[in-house]
Each structure stands twice: as C-alpha cells, then as structure tokens.
Length: 589
Image (cartoon, rainbow, N blue to C red):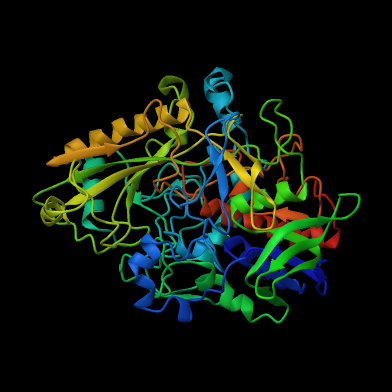
C-alpha cells in the first residue's frame, strides 16, 4: 500500500529543461510546486568542478551522466511482427540521468523550426501535391503556427543564453545570418561565437559555390550574460568538453546554469531526487488526474503524491511510457490506424564526410559544443520535393564540436583499431582531419511507433516500452541527396583523403553507434484526439489537468536539433496555464 504524501498544487515529473521552466512559471504564480526526479541531484558546484568533470573516460566513454539500461530501457525491433529485444548497452541515443536531464550534457545547438516545418503537410500539398507523400507516411501540421510561437521561442533563447547571428529580423534579411530562417522579432541575446579553422575553410568553400554560410546558434556564451531570472553565464573558453559533460565554466546553457539556482530560492518550490514516477493516477471517471505514484528509492517505498495539476516533463521516451502505463489516451494500433498514444515516433537522419589534409593543422583540442559554420541552402523550404523524390531537408555544417582526445581521433578507413599501425596512423593524422556533416529531418510512418512490450518488464513489474522503428526510403533518399552536395563541397577543398558515412538503400536501424538523442513523437500534438494525444497547449485531450512537455509532441522530426522548439513550446504551454487554465481549469479550446 502506497504512503500518501501531503497534497501539492502541482507535481512535475522530471527536472530538466521543461521541468525547470514549468516549475519556475507556476511557482511565480504562488502555487506549491513539487518536482520529482528519478536520478540524483546535480549542480555546477560541486558536481561539475574542474578538473573532475572533464574525465573523458568516465563521462564521455562510459556515460557517467546517462541513464543505465539496467534501470530504465526500451525494447527495439524493426517492424511489427518481429520480437523486440532490450536496448542493453547505450549507443544510438543517450537519455540523461538526474537533475538537469539531457539539458545538462547536451552540445547546446539551439534552432527554431522553419515556418514551413510547422505546417509541413499543408506546405507539401500546396507546393507539390498529395502524390509526393509516400504511402504510410504520417505527415502532419502542428496545431499552432510559427508566428504564434515566435515570442516564446525568443523567450527561451533569452533564458538559455543563445549566441548567434540573426538572418531575418521582422522580414528584413541581415547579412551574415541564415537567410532561410523564419522572421525573428530580434537578434540573439549574444553575438555569435568565434569559430575554428575547419569552419573557416568550409565558409570559404561554400561562399565560393554561391551558398550562404552562417554561425550555428548555440547555448554557449560568447560574452558575460545575465538572463531574466538573474542567472549569470561566463564567456566560453573553448575547452572542448560540452557534449556528455556538465560545464564547469558556467558557459553552456543548462537548467542548472539558467534556471535552477533561482528556482531553488523560492519557498513554494521543492524537489525530490531518487523518486521514480510509476504512473499517473486518475479519478474514477478517468477525466482528471489525482496525482502520481512514485517509488522513493531512498526510503524503499511507494508514495502517492496527490496534486491538482500534473506535468509530465521527463524525457520524451519516459513521458510516452508513463502515458501508456497510466492508460491515458488510446494506444496506437498500426494495423487499423486507431489510437494516438505511441503514434508518430521518429528519430533523426544524419551523415557526414571526413576530410584528411597532410598540410593543414586543425588543433582538435580547441572547440565548443556549438562551434560550427552552417549552410541551410538545402533545408526544407529550399528543396523541390517533387523533383528530388523526398519530403524533408537538412542543414550542412562543419566545425570542431569537442576537444576530447579519445572521441576526436578520426583515422582513414582501413586503419587497424589497435597496435603499432594504429599508433603510427594517429601520429600521422591527428589534427589533420575535419568533417562536414548533414543533420536532417526524419518523417513519421504508420509502422514506426511506441507501445508496451508483451514480454519484458522492469524492476517494478511494469511492461517495458517497445520501440518499432526502421529507416524508410524517403529519408534514405534525403541523406543520399545531402551526400552528393557535401561531397561536391569537400572536393573543392582538395583533401588528400575523403571518406563518407551515410545511410544507403537497405540500411537497417542499428542501436549500437551513437546517432543523436533526438527521439520524438508518441505524444503528438494536434486538434484531433483520434490522431493526437495533446492539444495545441500540450494539454492531454482526455485529462484536462495533465500537460505533457517535450519532443513527444512533434508529429515528425525537424531537420534541426529539437531543444529550441521544446523550450519554446514549454513557455507557450506555461503562458496558457498562467493566463487561462488556472483561472478556469478545463480543456482549453
């Protein structure tokens, strides 16, 4: 029998970016807010102290800040009808563990969606006709426009401390920025970061080809900065330890650096770590949530936490798992197309080309998580879907994203992985290589989805969540198109050796190599409860006092990294809560 804790106004599940944002916004309303975090407490001091936090073996290779599959995992298969097996060793994606979540160990890339991506189905049909949409592709519009969301995207950029160069301010194109982005109400909070030699070479090459390079926008401080909560960031020192690490220099935006220390000073906010939420509890009629039941690992007991408002702010995979376990929404059935919970799972399509130069030195120990120059000339709104034979797009980028010696040692194909020849090759090529990468969209399909596994269970006896996913021909065509464009650029740079890695026809999804932690869908937003889980305010269609944050709301994946849109949607939902829902709790029209 679960122990019942004192009731709170709000219970927040997960204390990463969205949990921190919603907790701050509702605490400012005077509500009693409790956040529950399954992992341990993490803070810049003492958790990210130099030099302990830049232990590459512990954190970069052995995933010290990530969730352990023995504690939380999914099962994976390629198609319905196959038996799924547990994801036992981290590889393809790396969910964060503890306070700050994945927002603590990310690289900081912070993008806005293109306006066309917010209405991708309508845009595709209007421009190219229905026939370009392949059978089985579940292309959908977001239930709100870029124009509606823009102020909230801007607010997240201000809180997270983004450095960048605007390309379109109120419809006026700005030299040096992205000419293909949607209109912005103002520039980024900080100027763009300086960039490294490899990015300079890429800039020269792409300009010569008539493309439009610009600095990648990122949550890395180019100068001293104070956000609206009074949280301070210091200028980045290019140490190269962003991805998979906490930032000891207060330079990378994270929930810790940007929100949590201000939030913790509020007397009406509290949080509990090592508290794993098992399910959302519903009233007998199923129309409202009464709170959550969690397992207190410190006390070794189940606890029912009653609350008037429940906010799911965990990672996308965990939010969807909780919805399925709690019976919220109808589970998606890929055969009939009925149901919405678990529908629309998508990932990210990436690829890259490595260039080796005997006569160039790139100083690979210098970098930042968002150090790059980019072209968006082959983004969604620049591609002729009918001509090229695919729906989607990609940005193309070059720069040094980390200075970590173990993980930053590209070698020519065929080099032995150990021994004397391996050492000789490192001596010859370390510091003489750079990469040009493609980061592209991934569409949603009828037979890519999430549901409960019928065989495997977790330590609490709950079914694991099952991921059914494989690459599709549309997205393979997209990445092969980008390969052609990238190799054209690379050849103009005259490398001594050039080698590429892109998904090709017949490629099967492989959980072993890291790709991105950009899992989306499963709790898709939309106006129709038959095909979506949450409405335009991220409010559950069936349970009005339950809101679900994060990339689970994406109906398909963007060409961009998801965090900027996730943050903007969090502030959009918080605005609806503060200005409408709290005055009159109900389903928001």
